[in-house]
Image (cartoon, rainbow, N blue to C red):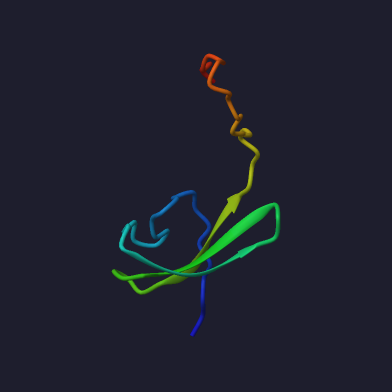
Length: 73
């Protein structure tokens, strides 16, 4: 049996049949990318979804004394 790999941009969908009915398994994070293993419940293909980790923003909680006004972020 020959296996053909299909690479397609289709986040959350099966690249073979387009179904969103995927069963997700383990993931792997190398600090730059995270890989999710899946099996499609429609066509039963198996594969991996690759995502790039990207910095978005930082949030911090500031302690406020009762005499200080709240400021918006």
